[in-house]
Length: 354
Ligand SMILES: Cc1ncc(C[n+]2csc(CCOP(=O)(O)OP(=O)(O)O)c2C)c(N)n1
Ligand SMILES: [Mg+2]
Image (cartoon, rainbow, N blue to C red; front, side):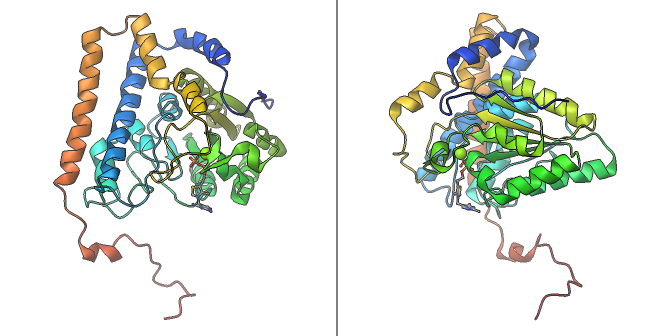
């Protein structure tokens, strides 16, 4: 397969022209897909809006990075996967398990640090995990998950199945050596992994332009002759299509793909970031491309749901979020004895000096 590169000049907003052109492929997706995308993304959004409020009330402590604005990167990808495929990401990780189908109450309880959370309250916001969903976290070290993603793909290739691993990362992570090492080996070994850069244009408060001359991040794959694409990440359609192409290649044994998805986070880097490094206009420009609004517009235009049915979806989502809070409030904190459980220890490890 020839390497595919689509280079855009601007590294900030994806033009709405490009977005319109791509959404013309909407015909391919039917009612069920749009309704699923809409409900899934609305659940992520409403869940995180509440999480933000609960953080301010100090019900949730520690770090908390919201995905608000970036939801299409997960919803559009999940619709192109099969249940046995794997996913791994960084610390901005609440939306990924929800998109994969985890009951949000387990995500919320984890945010609360309660024993009923998906990692038993021991991980918190940055460390969601679910073995059943093949969701491998939740990683706080920038770029740390990239070689792990390649490793999961290596395991599947070794076992001889056709599973694919989606390995998400931020734009800041591509400046880590681990990114380049993982890409090199993944390509050399033709691993079934899709590297997805969530390019929201900022690593904390530092813009992509400020750290490198290379601002079209998909071209970083060229150094490894890896197929790559630049994708409108504000649209479920374009995300799905790009993942579908990459998945097809990976399942056939043709190896990895790097997808740079142009997206935007509406909130600050974390709850403690007032986001003074960007303008209000820039934020408003992206809000016009809101993926949830776009999906809803297609639903309305094509009469995929009545107003009553849309209200029922909104209510279902609100109820789920409310339930997740009630569940977390009523759960206990882990017992102190849990501290030494679930810790990997190799009994005969030769390098520990007691
Ligand atoms: C190795 C390492 N260096 C620095 C940090 C501190 N840090 C946490 S998030 C972050 C920015 C990463 O930005 P990006 O990869 O673009 O992801 P985003 O937050 O935009 O999703 C930094 C520098 C860290 N966690 N790990
Ligand atoms: Mg970023």
